[in-house]
Length: 239
Image (cartoon, rainbow, N blue to C red):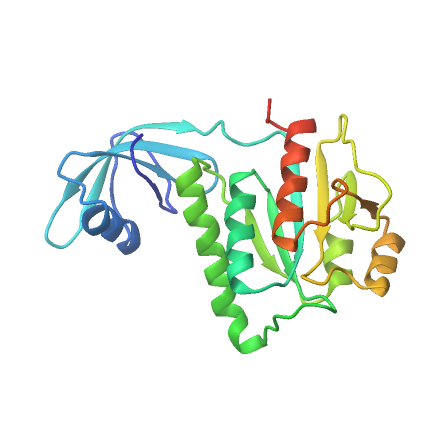
């Protein structure tokens, strides 16, 4: 498979693009690609361009051969509201959720979040989160970039990101979930210590239902990913 690079540009057959600094460096210095090697560009909006690369002393050019629409997106829209956790855990969640076809990820602080994030670090962290998702898309052959947002209040995150089916994952729940013909689902996942009683009441008041993922207690970095996999199996593209 040809290496994949994200380039936020319009693609036209027979056009030549100058690659931005990051993909150009990755192609020439990391992958050690050679003159005339094939690559695939994607724009994050579902468009892909097959091209060959040409290397010059001051730039790397991509000569576009053909343009096509990606067909790797799930018919099921999935939203993950993830409580703020440590950076290592969050990187894992972002990467694997992208591989599992998540449509949107909202990071939100919770009462029991051990990790704290002040406004001074937010812009840098958000850029890091988006870069993690972008790298995951390059690896897993997705050509749509999932949205990544930070919401400072759980109530707003829950209220503004509702789907046809809205679930919060809790080991205290009495049953699992079955999506049937649902075309969109939102999962809310608590931090390391889980959602507090007040946060659970808030979710219930906003129309969310509690859902159980088996008899074992899952870590926060496992729960959302397991839910996404189950959802894709029930109503998405895991066949």
